[in-house]
Image (cartoon, rainbow, N blue to C red; front, side):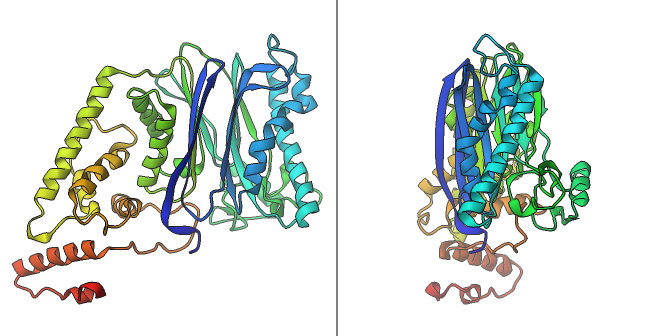
Length: 447
């Protein structure tokens, strides 16, 4: 089976909450991966006298989920309980805003502490054999500041005043400063990976890459040190924060995702639904990884607009009518498969598609009417596999970001193959050629 399943697991884990003037929603999906290795944290009201503070994070595990799961349960404790963090006033009560530099130092110390603690656990329980690791991206929100925290290639961004105001920088081995550290530790960067293997240059865990004698924890091939950014809050302009693993960012750029979120917030205030639409859209855009996203909205986030709701309903109705028209034109060729329907729609200029999501974000609407009208729907390829074929047609240059395995040929059901054969038969008949037998298409049940 390799790194991928035969078809994606599309069940979602959701959560929501509110407090401290914030609303949040989250969604995670295993997708095509054999194992779900992501984890997340969402806490409103922190311990040690930090009730007005909140903390959110996404952890993208690799080579197992152990490190990601441990971090989601214990990282916040390591941050808020260490002397560096408390020494800056963190824990001094709601009226005390800690010194910014001390908060940043405390967050950094918390990362180094938990990484060392996990190494000790690994050596005691597994003899050092635990090779899993995890990226981490998070935000700590105080009454006055937003602290973005990043270690690895997950990403967080802030939308302010209708545009991307800030986003974290991915830690990739090919980045000049990261590459310099790797080489100074005796390693190399090959095919944009640490020693030709690991695709991130900073992570928690991954202790096989942290055993160079004479080098400190932040000087190893892979560093557990986060980058921490402090941004002053703007109550009038701050809209929302998005935290997501690379399964999201592989197929959506910062501006695209921000535009998509903003458009969704104008049609619903259900943040779980918005997050579900994000992961579904990314799956349909071709993401092959686990996917997790946390959406945190401030008081100035976009609100539901009656005009936007009306446009959305009109768009859905238009797409439904177009699918019906495409299926009615089937003629002697039989029922077109969903790939044909999607390709046909993709070739058209359709107004008011959600920005950033485009046609992929309306996949569920298209599939619903297609399944209703298609008498062979029980024999057709599962929806995600069909959409994977469509996305490969739309983005032929796109390659999986985390694997070097050759792409598998998509499965075609008998109904799809018969439609293909009939279409080919008509095409060759028009050219005066004899059509091939269905047997040549490897459909034993039809021969």
